[in-house]
Image (cartoon, rainbow, N blue to C red):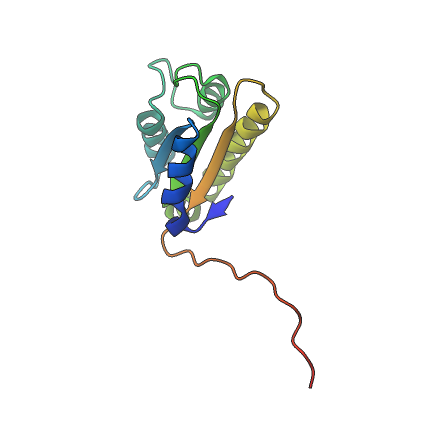
Length: 135
């Protein structure tokens, strides 16, 4: 889900208030897969055995035993657009890994994983209104 960055702070605060573990993954300046994996490792505090590849990231996101127990986890990925433009294939793979993890946790009784994408400069999309009147 793409989120207006102005709504990110209240979303993180609400998740924390509900007892969720919150993580912010800032991708500002990331332009390589190695840098993406390093940022993921740091932000998510991935275990030392994290191998820095797609399969290892997918395994860690499905395990989550290394994070504190919580009714849910919120991962806010910020400033992602530069990476998506620089590495479109890797961005698609990253999104697939995130989507698979969210799907896995959706079916779990041990909590949930929610991922929000926020990009500075995103403008809220207007809600559709009634069609214009013809006069």
